[in-house]
Length: 227
Image (cartoon, rainbow, N blue to C red; front, side):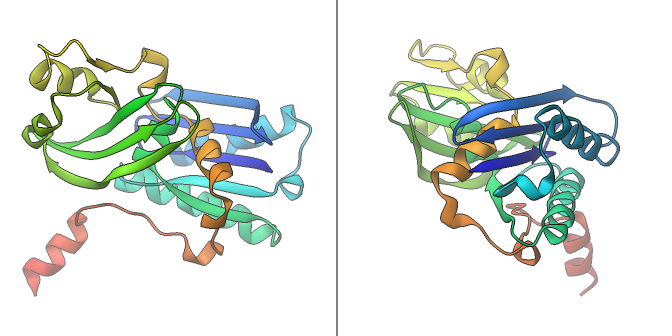
C-alpha cells in the first residue's frame, strides 16, 4: 500500500508517505502556526518530492484523537477532502495513542501512551509490543494522572507529550520504567502509516471519519448546561 498520513492532534504538524512499509518521506514540525496553514502544503510538498499524485495512493490516514479539538478537526477535514477527490482512496482515522505506541514498536513490552488533557488529567492507553507490532491491552481513556501509578511494578516505556512529567511524578524510583527517546515522544505521521498498514480493514468511507475526543467538548458541555 502507498499511504499518506497526516497528524494534527498536538503541537506538531506531521505528514508522511510510505510504500509497503518503506518510509518514502516524512516531515514533522513543532509549530506555532495553525495546522490549517501548514498541513496541506506540507503533504503536497512530500507528495511532489516522491513523484506521486494523490490518485497514486492506496490509502490516507489521520490522527482521530484524542488530542487538540481544533487540530483533530483540521486533520480529519483535510483527509476527507483529499479522499472525496479520489474515490478509490481508502481512509482511516487512527487513535493518537495507538500511533504513539506504533512509533515505539521496536521496544518489546508494555508501552504507556499518554497526552496531557488538562491540569492533572491525561489521555492514556496501554499497549503491548512484540518488537514488530503492537496491540491494545488497556482501552484509551481520559483519567486523573494519579491513576497511572497503578501501572507501576513492571517494565514499561512511556511516550507522549507529558511522558517526562509522568515519569518524574509517578515512577521516579522505577528504573524499569523509562521515557521514549526524544525523537519518538511526540506524534509522527509515519506511525499512523504503520498502524494503517497493519490493519487495512479499519478503512472507512470519508464521511464516516470522526474524531474520538474521549471527553466532552466545550460546546457539548455548554449545551448540556443550557439544557
